[in-house]
Structure formats: structure tokens, C-alpha cells
Length: 124
Image 1 (cartoon, rainbow, N blue to C red):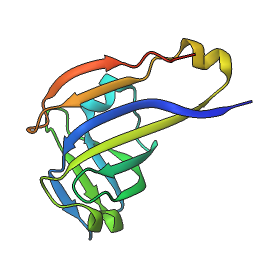
Image 2 (cartoon, rainbow, N blue to C red; image 1 turned 90 degrees about the vertical axis):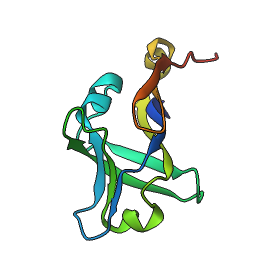
Image 3 (cartoon, helix red, strand yellow; image 1 turned 180 degrees about the vertical axis):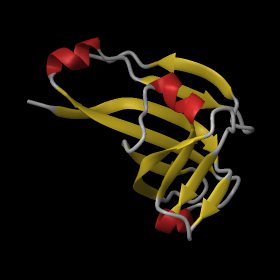
Image 4 (cartoon, helix red, strand yellow; image 1 turned 60 degrees about the vertical axis):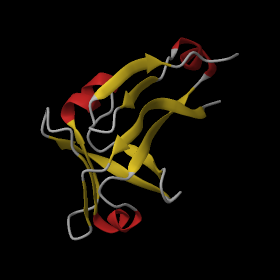
């Protein structure tokens, strides 16, 4: 049996732009993607810590070092620049994969610098 589990997370990233007229997605600095193994076109669930809004979208690659977290398309109506977001990526895993997996988590500062890269230990 496969279960949907946390693959990786960006915690408390600051929204740098909300572009409703742009093609839908979330643009994330390529350096952040590389650090946690998130890929272009991966589906993500985004939670807005200010409004409580939650929405699903997919990842665009932002310029490395740009610190961009830009919400595009219809989802941009759920955020404002400056909102803090939690970006969650899930994967389907069997029990053996789950036992070996340690989700990577970026804890962000307000200026979208990385405060910490950590891993979650599963509780069995």
C-alpha cells in the first residue's frame, strides 16, 4: 500500500509577489528547490499563515539567489506580498520507503534567507 506523506517543506517563506495575470504556479528560488529536492512542475500545497487560505499549485523555477516566492495565476488572489507561507510537497511511499525517508525542511527568515535546513524523523 502507498501512503501520501511529507516529502519536503519550506516553512514561513515570505511572499515576494502576487501576480494574478501571470501563468499559474508558484515561482521558487532554484537554490531553495535544490536544497530540499523539490522539482519544477511538482505539485505543492501552500498555506497562507495570515489568511488561513490553502491552495494547490505547481512549481516554477526562480532565478538562483533571487529569494523569490511568487504566487501566480488565480492562486495569487489568496496572498499578498509579505504574507508568510508554508509550502508542502507530498510523495507516495510504501512502508519500506517511509522508514528510510527523512523529509527536508527549510525554515525561513522574514527576508527569505534560510535560517535552518532540518530533517524530520518519522515516528513509527
